[in-house]
Image (cartoon, rainbow, N blue to C red; front, side, top):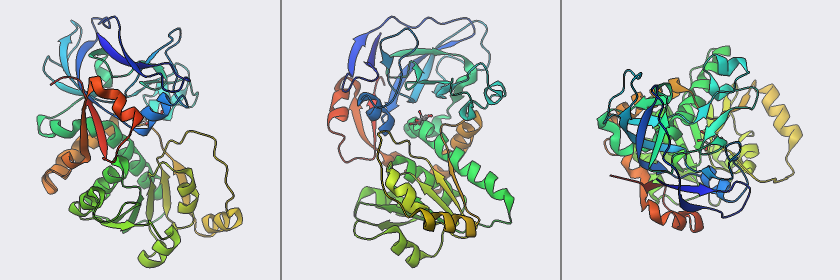
Length: 358
Ligand code: BGC
């Protein structure tokens, strides 16, 4: 089969190559890939900033946002049949930590987990992959068109789920949510928060005429462009938010966001940033605000099967409430043989996908 691979650590090593077809075991299924989503993590891996090849391999098959169709089912597999649409989870457990042993791979504490398409395990930019059913999520046909968004959606579901879990520490009736970043993760977060009935303000750099703003408004959220103003100005205008979701991909914004959380509020950090940036920050002020405001700042990565299930449920709800809105996120459908175009010039769209088969 053909696959898109990189040599992790080596900038711009991405290329397509022939690989042996993966071998299916009796307790696995073979999945034919339909499309993969492209995200900043893929770009960072191709820049040589992130990612690891499987032990003993020189190459890593890239790709973690996935949608495929079951092609062949092993003799011992129950509950899946040929033709089922599936999205695979990304992270696989380590063998040692208590979280992985309990099936909470996304909370691995040993750091020895593997991640498909990212860390020591091949990903989904390939014609086929094989997998155990426990890692596959069945997709209802009704959400097929945008189901490739389920992996980033699971990341958002986990972040919001954990924010609500953390806030069980007090009587919390959140009203105002601010989402920093109008990319796919930001807009998915806005959709989930709107589905939960919160007043939601999406903050981005693009002007109000941009598709990001229009999508936010279709969801009943507000959109504020901060091209020429600061987050503190915004907080003065809107009032203190109960929940802030950071999804800009900029570590600088993370620290700015710590200054705008409301009393007893929570800031959830979802951007995975590579590089080694250094900056001066108003540390006394930030600390004082966090302490006197009883605030929580937490990072959240990856997701477990529970969050994929929540994502599927919310996709159905969101598509009913705001028909067609999720499809609008899929702005650039790229034939997979043209993959290099996205890695060289990222363009201005929201979510790009590589179309592997129909
Ligand atoms: C992926 C997560 C992954 C994280 C860190 C993100 O882009 O969506 O599944 O855990 O990168 O590797």
